[in-house]
Image (cartoon, rainbow, N blue to C red; front, side, top):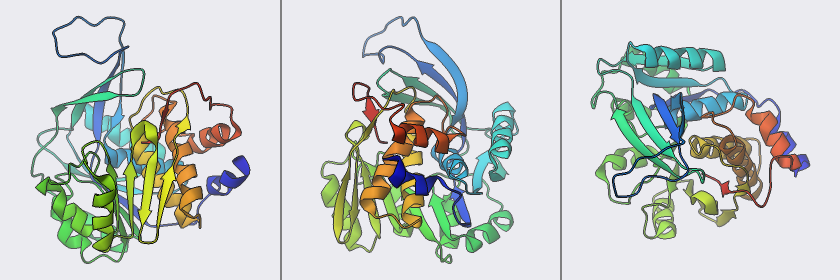
Length: 315
């Protein structure tokens, strides 16, 4: 497998790419089983603090694959915000951060050993943050590719996106097919990624979006892999087996890696396989996105991490 994938692990051609929305500093708690519906005392947990949220995850994935992304987010003037600023600087991410008086978003993630997660939003920033349009307008209009987050900080930017010539990719996460919040983001998108968790008929929804002019729809199915829908094809992507340490970031890496492989000329089968490898390489670490992602993908493609007896997730 390594021979096919190695081409995607080289330094990519430059691309002006920007990620809009979503950065948090999270408390991560691992336990043998997620809590049930009764009061309980849970022992033998481990915990750590780490970066979170989809915008930061996608920016970190882009940087790990060799790009120099711009990330727009809202952050507080607090310790959590300072940690995110330092992380972006260390990863080669250009951060455009608007000040949020409500503080930096903080989440509590409860995770079991199978990668399942309960996310509790301890604080999620302002519901309608102020955005400095003078700082973000040029990067958006100059971008070739935009990863658009479904966040409050992205809403004021949607009119500007309509002036952009960039391809726009939107990750809807666990969209239920009816939420009005998602509608303006879907309207902007050329490519849509969505989890099948709350969709009763994912293929029907994917075909509806394709009929509306979307170039591609990716339906992620967790441990069952993903399906890539285009106007003329439907490609099932099997998951890659790996030891699951932390499921956070896997969907973001899958999205970025799929785009990256397709940008380098891969068809949906090969691009999907590379994206599944990248997601699995992320699942095997406690980083939102490991800085040595390319090296881990190479090892996984050689079979040094993969093991059919281990758990598997794609996104």
